[in-house]
Amino acid sequence: MCDSSLPALCGTLALWRQGSSLRGGLTPQLLSSGSAQSTLDYVSRLITLREETEALGEIPALSTLGPSLPLGLPISLSKPVCTRETCLTRSSDYISRRAWQSGGLCVPSAVAAGTMQRAASLASPLSFRRLALPAALSRSLSCAQDVLRRTPLYDFHLAHGGRMVAFAGWNLPVQYRDSHVDSHLHTRQHCSLFDVSHMLQTKIFGCDRVKLMESLVVGDIAELKPNQGTLSLFTNDAGGILDDLIVTSTSEGYLYVVSNASCWDKDLTLMQDKIRELQSKGSDVSLEVVDNALLALQGPTAAQVLQAGVAEDLRKLPFMTSAVMEVFGVSGCRVTRCGYTGEDGVEISVPVAGAVHVAMALMQNPEVKLAGLAARDSLRLEAGLCLYGNDIDEHTTPVEGSLSWTLGKRRRVTMDFPGATVIVPQLKGKVERKRVGLICEGAPMRAHSPILCTEGTVIGTVTSGCPSPCLKKNVAMGYVPYKYSWPGTQLLVEVRRKQQMAIVSKMPFVPTNYYTLK
Image 1 (tube, helix red, strand yellow):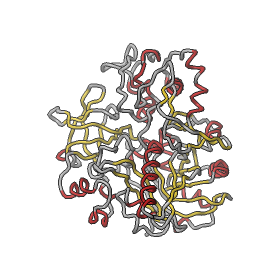
Image 2 (cartoon, one colour; image 1 turned 60 degrees about the horizontal axis):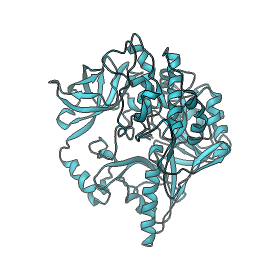
Image 3 (tube, helix red, strand yellow; image 1 turned 120 degrees about the vertical axis):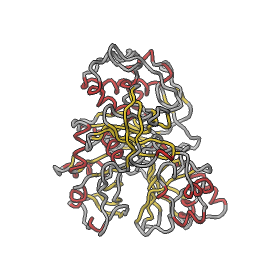
Image 4 (cartoon, helix red, strand yellow; image 1 turned 90 degrees about the horizontal axis):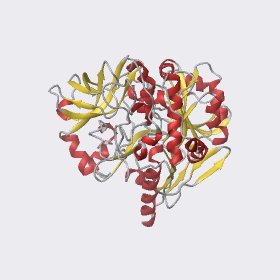
């Protein structure tokens, strides 16, 4: 699954600079509030910046940053900005988001302060010199933590050295004691445990559950076999992607849906509004938000590790299938063979009371290590998987996003999904732009880096990029005009005001290892 348009709260400080050299200090290059960048772009920047520069000056004082913190909305550091309300309920140290009918989000300035403090703490082991936060802002950090939601594994993360950051409204580990690269490579060679409990999990009940879902997504839900799932897309009438999600048709008589945390409000509202519309016409359909934790065990040895804790034969559970089973003594767990790394693995939906127990049981196996958001981002990028809000959004169609394969064959004919009149014709003709993979050497490509043709004209933009730990090269995704989208096409990417050669590449960059029945 993709995790989504991120609120860009982590490594902000590393990117504030001007000019081609970082010597002599970092000057804020204020970001517009309309384009929030990915948290992990910043974190990755923090991790690699030391290698890219010879010297680093002081981080700018918070007072110079003002209202341009990249939160996607104006932020004042002197008083809170409350645009809407938040309802939080606490149960066994688990802060669970509840849908508040008036809808909304409350973002106090303390969140911004907490973000800066955490970004600075990440910078410290990289030999960054940093300025102390003003005392008033430091005192407000505890307030900020009350706003961020916590998963059932929050204390577990702290006990295992997790470096916690704000991520899509949640407090989640960006990495643990191992480096980001070590965690990445361990996942490719063994297996890693990720906490993805921030994802929105829902169940759709009723005789008209398929009718509901097919009125919102592009996939063929009706043809799913029992306990089979598919990646699909919510789309709008203009053909834009509202979110990506996994829909599973369960043998228990409901649809199990997992979508992105950053789109929690939007997705929930979308489904609830459609349910009310259908119910008013006599349809039998309802929705339940699932409060379970969600653990992702990813890597080539993941099934071997999990097999020790379940009675079912996991060799009979291929990619994108699901089953309810007891996991290490915890009943009522749903195990789905999927993930966001390109490796074999599972996502385990666990009742909150048993989440820590399952995590600790998995960690007893020496094959398993904990991994955080930083590794998850570089793994999904190597696998060519999109991050909602960066690589796809409401202004991107499935065809432009190279996601035509998500369109069900029957749905292409019936054209009864939102935006079909825009999307289906694009399948038969040329689109103006396409999402492509890029590989280059030299400085890493980052989100928003300009893409140029060899004549030097700007033709597109990088949407995600990082150094590939497996390939030892820099990989990225971005959008270019259709005629430049063919693999092998030579282009230029501007990084730190310098142009360097990049080659359009097929994706995934690293071969995927999904488990299928032979």
